[in-house]
Length: 132
Image 1 (cartoon, rainbow, N blue to C red):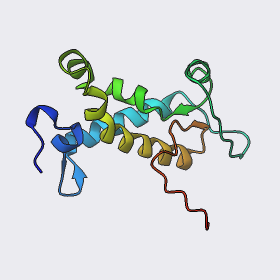
Image 2: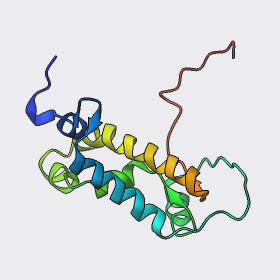
Image 3: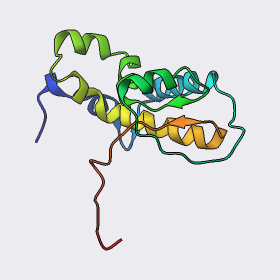
């Protein structure tokens, strides 16, 4: 079913034939590069999982790490401010798929560069199989 043009997501607008448009890929690369620019490689190789609230997450952002917060990524996308002003109820949903794709790219870049990361997300979309 074709979505109403007013409710198209940014992924609907910029993802064609299995890839984002070249201009949009450049925006994604800039966001990832900006996130990586202020962090140094981790000194110790450990995997830690944090379950943190919003206030703690903000404090951790000032440390030597990158954060794949979808909320933060959405605010960097060019359409964010206009969508929040014109369609505040749907803005987050319209930016969600693209911000998730960027968060995945941040995660992959963080692994390649061996930097500390804060992975912001839920397991709500994960299928939990008791037989595993």
